Length: 368
Ligand SMILES: NC(=O)c1ccc[n+]([C@@H]2O[C@H](COP(=O)([O-])OP(=O)(O)OC[C@H]3O[C@@H](n4cnc5c(N)ncnc54)[C@H](O)[C@@H]3O)[C@@H](O)[C@H]2O)c1
Image (cartoon, rainbow, N blue to C red; front, side):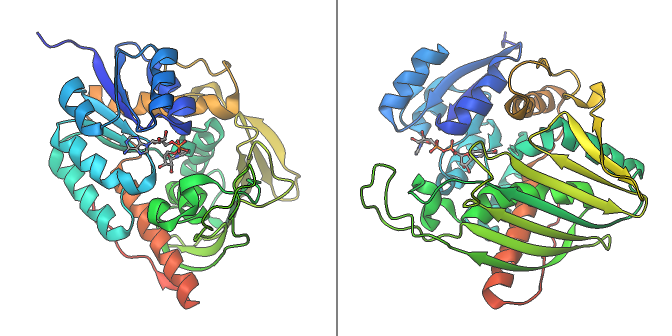
């Protein structure tokens, strides 16, 4: 008889696997982290011991073949995602993948089609959907508490310093710089709040070479942007102003400046990542006041996470694993799915083109 335990494999056990995926999956009853995979043998050994995982592999093919997990999480550098996703579906796995699905829209569309054809569950790790303040803001917009949203601003401003930042600074491994790293999440949650983006104009900038490691050794310079800004017209008639930057002194360390502020005909409201359990809300001629997030929005229904446990700026991320597991158990689509990953990529590519050609660019349609 097949066990009811859902066996999960983690492919890539670096940063995000350690503070999002492992704590997320390891707290869900009936889920076993059955195998892990990483090409860094020292890190793999460390994780195996620390996490008490039985099987560890340096080759993803061996993990799929020998551990035969029900589901995998892909958290390796970006250029590897597409091939790993296709292998995982071929092995019959459900897949939760970090962004992006592919290195360009064409690849991303093909991955989405493969996901649909697989009959497996597919989920995009758009983590910020799970911030309690974001869930509550979405609810208020849906209820019409803001009236017609006229304009909005979305900012992610951090201070990563001028030194080398690993694979993220090379187009061949990352695909995009700040736009793909931080911007893509804001595209996703802006569309989740306000509906599809119709057209964009944009500007991207590389400010520093990043040709020195933290230890001061020379390294190949970066070839991606570390600042990105765009204006978006939504189909609803709303307009959004977006700004993302990795070199914003005063906005770090901790990287917590993440703001979505919506201005509607009836009220304004703002989500801020550094106060994830409250939002700001104001009606005409009233200053903003802090509104606590009601208990039903503090975590996803049924999630085993205690909303008061741990650092609230981190712990909400664990609900992502709960959504993936719940969708598998309930036989429904994940939210957000690979469709949302493809959709955000379509907007990001319109932004790249708008910046390159210095003009407004329409976002292509992305049929489900
Ligand atoms: N959703 C989010 O909020 C969020 C946050 C951080 C990172 N990310 C995404 O997660 C992914 C990983 O980012 P990170 O910050 O954890 O990077 P990282 O460099 O810390 O970890 C990546 C790991 O993948 C391993 N790896 C490299 N090649 C591999 C291969 N062929 N097979 C298996 N493992 C391999 C590396 O050794 C490393 O340990 C990226 O796609 C990134 O965009 C998303």
